[in-house]
Length: 140
Image (cartoon, rainbow, N blue to C red; front, side, top):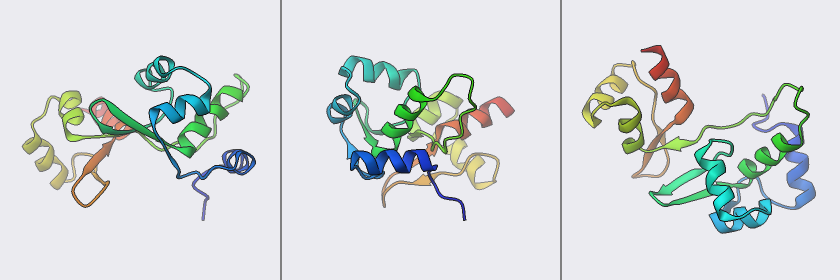
């Protein structure tokens, strides 16, 4: 069975004493990365760092997302990136905006197996993987 994270990420987490699944607020993440909140927001908008969208103006980060970003920064430019990066999870409103489909159309396509599968986040929240939605859009 393949490990969910490569050895470099696990070693970084061990050496820094953080859990891969610890959650960081935007302020905590900016302190961890030694950058301003504005720079962190720009990284999010440019999809250079993965994050969890909690509310419209609120996002959080798992420890592994911050470490993967750091690992990408120290990796030589000519080396092929081999980091198991999970997708950003987006909500139904973002899916609707990207696909120009209604909530009902998305549900029908999903039920028929012609759209990306949803990810259960909590008992009452679901999301979709951003990269899967993008691949679906390109395939249409």
